Each structure stands twice: as structure tokens, then as C-alpha cells.
Length: 283
Image 1 (cartoon, one colour):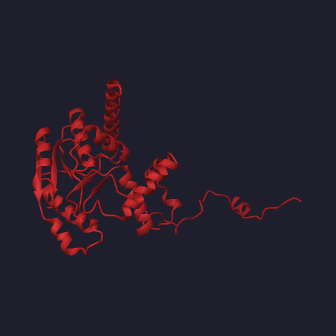
Image 2 (image 1 turned 90 degrees about the vertical axis):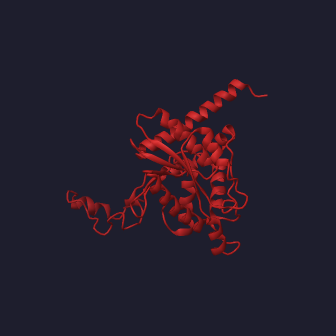
Image 3 (image 1 turned 45 degrees about the horizontal axis):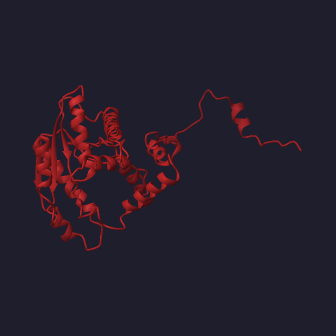
């Protein structure tokens, strides 16, 4: 039997670590400002539960004032437990809104059986959440994507999209009306898994897209887990690389002016000539 004191210590340690990582991301990217109303998007998964919990704790400690409103989009999935999230929000005493929209029916009608539904589903959700944010007067929209989600997206875009592109911690919507933030950008998924078990969140599985087999994201997730096991530190290094970009050492001419790159006028001609002299070997 585990020592209760040790268990309590480990739980408190994880709680502090999550708050520290989320707080650091919020500060680094100026995600939340004084007077903001943050719409916390709740799917019923471990990540969104943890995000709401962390933001509520940070709200109590932050030197600025901001409000939170938890929002769930009920997509009318068969068997979806409609009372789970409202009951949870009431228990917390947090302001909340449930948006009822039959995106499930639209996705099932438009996407052929066996095909990936995630693309259309995410576009429909995004449009609805943007509208709801405007109606609620939210100045920021918080999504629960974590560090591993960002890395998975980077790898998917590289392997399948031919782009060096990930998930930004903060972005402006195409119409310029909304700011989306990802407070868990620095948090590894393994921390969230442990925290969800510790807090006993009432998890609601996604039966529309998250449970589909052979998705590209699942393959990336498996690859990351394999790297973590075989090569400790590789995933952390990969994540650090997208925070330390050197455009002059890549090949995108739109990000660095290679064509007009010229020699520094202060460089000596002799130095240039010497650099191109054949190497003389003494035999």
C-alpha cells in the first residue's frame, strides 16, 4: 500500500508543475491580458478538463483580472452524456454555456463511411465556436492542445503536407476578430494523463473522430512515444527546435532573402581569394 503522504506530495508536485508550465506559456506569448474574458473550449476529454482546472487556479493567483466561461459544443453524437459537463460546471461554480448543434449528422451525411471525419468536423466546430465567442463577448478562445499535439502536427505537415508548420501557441482568426490561445503548449501529454487519473475527471470519449483507426495523427503519436522510450530527450529537443528557427539555414526564399545575399563590403578581397584556393598537400 502506498504511503498517503507520498501520494499527496506527488499529486501536489504535479499540480504545481502543470500550473508553472501553463503560466510560463501564458506569459511568454502574452496569451491572457487584464480584463480578458477567456472562453475555455471543453470537449470532455482529459486535456480540456485539465486546462479549465489550471486556468481557474491561475485566475486566483494572477496579478491581473480576467474571467472564464466554459463552453461545450454538443455535436449530437449518439449516446453523448448531455448532463455530464453541465453537472461538472455547476459543481465547480464556473460560468458555462452549452451550444447544441448537429455537426455529427452533417459529418455523417457528407463524409463517406470509413473516411476520415476529423477535417470537416474541426472546420464546423471552429466556425461555431467563433460565433459563440462573439455572442458571449469572449476576447480569447482557449483550446486544450498540448506539447505533443504541437509536435504531432509539425510531423504530419512535414511528412504529408510538405510544410514546416505546427500549431502556434497564439493566433488570430482569418477574419481578424478572434484570438485563439493554447495555454497547455508547454505541457507533455503524459503529465495530463497522470493528472486526469489523479483528479478523476468524468472523461467523455470522442466516438466521432478520435476513435478512428489508421489516422495519421495516431501514427505520429506512436512515433513520439517510441522516441521517448528509445531516445530520451529527443522529443524535448524537437519541440525546442520550433522555438529556435534559423531562416537563413533553411530553404524558404520568402522567409530569407537569399537572392540579394552579398558579401560584406568590409571583407577583404584577399580573404575571399584565399578561401577558394585549392588545398596544397605536402607529400
